[in-house]
Length: 329
Image (tube, rainbow, N blue to C red; front, side):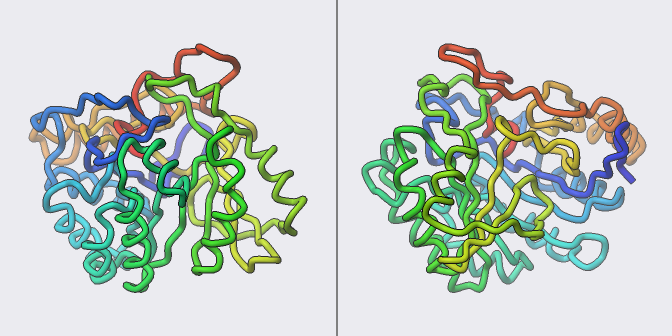
């Protein structure tokens, strides 16, 4: 089993299959983002081998991420291969997506054994969506969400709360999602990678958002858990569920059960830390799985107690230089 020095057992892997994305969200990456050369990216076979090794060491949930995972060619081959391991050590395979490619893949995802997907959606306003993502693709995303629902997938919307941008829309977005049977998780903007704007200008504390929502609705703490860092609340008036991920205002590291592996095979024990172990080198050493297992255990030794995220003032450098799309969202 994978257990760190603070006796936290690792049961959840977030596995990035690509750093590429067909959107350019302003808080995530610059417009002229430089993506990795193909030679540095793990093959689908290597990704599957890594996933299988983690399952053998006690990981029960795998979330496939990017970039945008569905832009990678033959991505569904990996999904199907992992889906066949559900019930034999693996509890579930899930996916985080921006939704632009979801309409054409929803049925195949369901057939492969995926039961729920997270879709990033910060606004239902077309103009604001185009401003935030630098792409006029809201219609594609909404089609993808509808297709996922029709395919029987549970949909959770991930929404980054942004001061001066979507903060006034959040109640209506939540109400709409709940009316469609979708849950919503609000996320504080995280300082990862240089972008074309100052994140301080649009950082919005979810403690502030929660206080505003409680002026309108009755929020009751829920014991619902998905393996991730969100705290959940039931909203009496809408009948839906609301999650809050608060990496800056309310630390949740004590119960961390996850690690991230980038598309280049770098294992980051903490999203907010610079500690890493090179699994790609271990994969390609050719001595069976011995080097890979040793590398995974090294990662347990360097996993920190908590992250170091902070947005304390204007003009600050990001807490980590790598972009979220590189690490895996």
